Length: 360
Ligand code: SF4
Ligand code: SF4
Image (cartoon, rainbow, N blue to C red):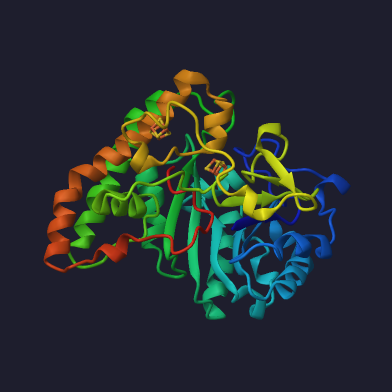
């Protein structure tokens, strides 16, 4: 089972699209003991622990204690990377994947996250490379109205020093549209959807030379289209991926500690094996023609519908457009596979659920 471990709900940034995620004071800090955590996790097999926050690097000593206590676990980290270089080398090298929040070029990133953030993130990803970190470094973007998805994804993909292995993005459509967007429809029509089409075309052009670039949302979707193997909710929430909140409660999704639907147990009384498949997406997803490819996008959005029914459909429109663009280039990808320029394994990502939600 995969568990996000919220190390603190405190954060050292105040990004424009993050509403109410942060908390201060005792309620923000881990309130269970490591013995309690061990009693729960020891009943599970093949444990994967994904450090999450708030900002998990604000609690490096706790991170080290957990890594020492569970030497057999696989570890992932999601971080804003401002303090990444505070993690001792021997610990940072144990992460299978590190997801680093960065939204594109300096202008885009600093507009959303604060001035100077881009440079510090780039410096700290450079530090990862200096210490010969060999895991997967993922640039994890939040894409909102100031974003140009083509420009911003290409910027991160094309960076050489330091280099990101993969680029992933999620649309800023989790919380209310109010205050976040002035013209979502216009932005999708004029900027986002055309940007996706250009990204897809560039991606296939680069494939002609045998390189499948690490554009996270495209890889597993094309893998599904090629193999025909249907996908379930790709973030795994409620299926095989859960969160242990700071108070010891167990939830289906790391962003929703305060939403009653999402709390499904706690580390003291819940049997880990009984968590599997505890929750799944409701209609309209199971009846959607793109469900086997999309998987349902987001359990939280499916349950809470903070954008209303019409808004939900608009967001699905972006998903269907992306899948449609990838279907168009599928014949060319098949030709490249047949001529062995690329292989189907190139699209088999992620190796383990690393916290990328896949569907933006
Ligand atoms: S496109 Fe929308 S309705 Fe269809 S499966 Fe995905 S999230 Fe559900
Ligand atoms: S995609 Fe939605 S349900 Fe899944 S982890 Fe992200 S916010 Fe939670």
